[in-house]
Length: 344
Image (cartoon, rainbow, N blue to C red; front, side, top):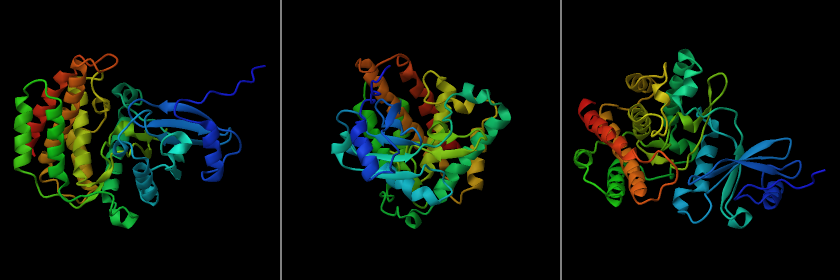
């Protein structure tokens, strides 16, 4: 008979976690076991169970990381604050900022049933009608988030919304400059147009920072059951979320599934870009008259991120396949940003 205890996944001391669960967490009916469900350079996510109940534990990546980039307290705070709003988020059960328990801060939340759809092939299997329903509800969820008054949910000090757009233009220019390997005239032109004409910001709201279909869970009835991955959340101009989501869609369409983060938007039945904007406008009171700027900024941001990956590829610092052509994906993004600045 095999009596070996289950091996804990990296980054999780189950004995210490079990003690913390009993003393400060949700409690447990017995010893905990766990499995890693998401890892890498992003925050680590584990499913933890006592054999009766299941929870999710989130902690920063292993090794030295910037605390501001993997702020467990920030994720825990925003989800806890949104618990009584129309925005679906997991129930949070506790935050541990004592690094002696697991070697880093962590928090515990509800395990929510649902699928994070990423690929068009996954949605195609559901059919056009269901895909349209899911994409419509995705937009409605984003609009609902942006309707939340930060002060009413005790998030009034969650960020510095004044000057948010100008800071974003400056930040991503610095990121692009830090990854310089080649001339990108379209990037220079897009930056110049963005910096020269920063619009007045809409009313400050909660910005998710990386809102897209594979960062939400969808149940078998095509309902959004949870919005996840709040590590980049802040206060600012919420139109940044809408624009970034649409630029992810454009990247998926141009680059194909191999290079894009997600190509879900090319699935038959998924709302078109114009449909997304129209649906969002119906559920939001925000002024979209300068939305072209936001699309241009989103394109500039994604291009800077991709150029950073391209830089690391040229330096031999990437692991795995699919990076050899990623530099080419930047060009249609920049063109899309320049076009959007003129069209909207």
